[in-house]
Length: 190
Length: 190
DNA sequence: ACAACTATACTGTCTGGACGGTAAAGTTAT
DNA sequence: ATAACTTTACCGTCCAGACAGTATAGTTGT
Image 1: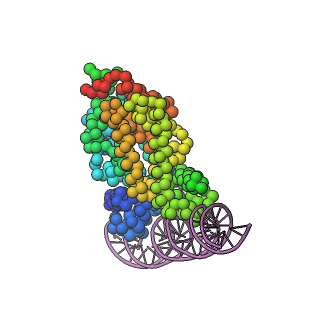
Image 2 (image 1 turned 90 degrees about the vertical axis):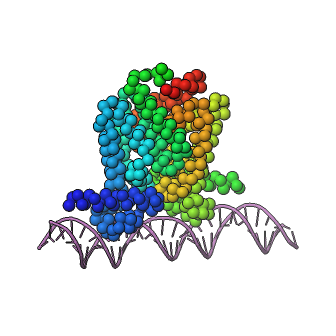
Image 3 (image 1 turned 60 degrees about the vertical axis):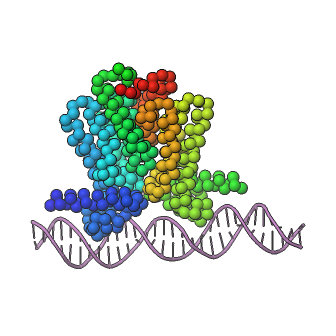
């Protein structure tokens, strides 16, 4: 029962993300979400008692999903830099569900900046993980910020990178991480 | 007269940005902007014939202002990397008017993703400038993306960086640019 | 010089539609 | 039976944009 409920809720969140992605954040209305999820508006409001609650659900789902994917990637990797590597890889992963879930950010920005609060908290934790990577903190932060920059650019569909450059950037970021694993402080050639 | 008109339009754009920043993108209504700018709604619609036109104006103003500030910074600097340096510095500059103008992006995201088109075009040009910096293209792109990442994070008020770390990151980015001016084209290559 | 006319820059009012949210009456599963 | 779920019908509010009117400053004809 709780399972079914969660499934239904997930279905509603997915529908909401699809509406945002296909029609833009301004078209995220309860009616549109209900129609996309093939329920009535009342049905939607039974599960999420307000539009705000719906977007909160979207945000929570996005953060949980992102964190889970990172965790599952670092299971077999014991390097301190594993987290950062997973973060970068995930940011560059054009996985459909990632893109879909990130609509939550757009929805929050569009509707109420207060909804971004859980994201701010999550970022604090991520920054700690970044600085615990073993790289020089500033370098590690630059790597994380670059991944962020790309992610935002692609989320808003304004990234100017060719596929080749994009691949090269990812490769270079991973190389920067890897190099620090082998204790290369001056970043010079060897 | 054309001068006065432009002043008035600038005033309206500023009012619109202030509304977005103080009350969120969802509260960007013609009425709110008119009130903030101390005109009637009709008066606002005289200058910007639709809400869409208003946001287009905001976007154009933001891009022009950003480009101008970069241009004015690189006047005395002939290094090919001058553009990238200026871009990074400007991204890190907590200048009030920059922050205010960047509300245009939020307004566009919230209202109609189509409005982001001019930004996409601008980014293409910026990426060209980035790759003409003399740095290895991937490194130059990483620097630009990191600046972007920080800018977005701060725009959405979710940046987890302490002031110290932030300063250190800026310093490091500038050092990366500077290093490539002197020697060491190959230092990023394996 | 001055009246007639036109353009610019607004103001205040109105309306049609959309949207968030409520209420209450079913329906289904246990 | 009853709790969980879903639907339909509806309300009040808000807002984009239209519109009609006003005031002031130029422009032109005489």
